[in-house]
Amino acid sequence: MRRDYVTLDLRHVDRDGDRLPTAVLAYDGPSDLLEERLTDAGGDPLDRERVDVAFRLRTVDDDATGVFSLTNRMTGEFVVEVNADAESVRDLVDAARRDDDPDDADGCYRVAVERDGEAVASYEKRTLLVYDDEGGLLRQHSLIPSGVEL
Image (cartoon, rainbow, N blue to C red; front, side):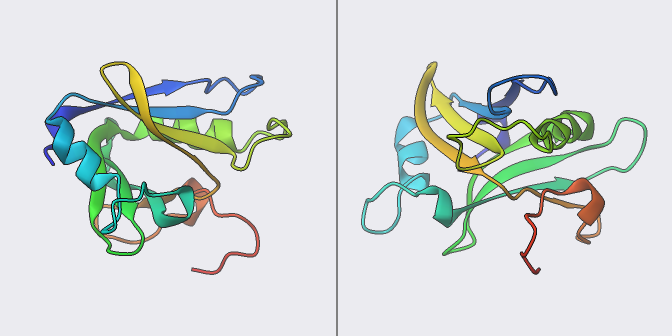
């Protein structure tokens, strides 16, 4: 799937908000490709337990950029990926670290995939791994729940 089919829009990243910070991945490519990526081999939709979220830096400078991605945990295949600036991802991580998450939330942030303005998938997550340009995990910039060993 081409990255230029996807744009990243952040919502509710204010630290005083009462809604989960959300990364919206707006997709405008072929619909059959998106549907294929969002389902498993049996045709069932991927649930939040089978999707990982990561950000890989490509450049480390004042205008740092990278790739924000959803990955199928079972196969390791990219589900959706998009070019993003590091500052946006940092805003998402900072907002997800706030202390006042909604009580009914299963995660501390949400990733939504949309096509033509309609939600096609939504995942509440607690983990977002951030890697440097050489593939090293940047723990201080990542969301890693307590008790999770990597």
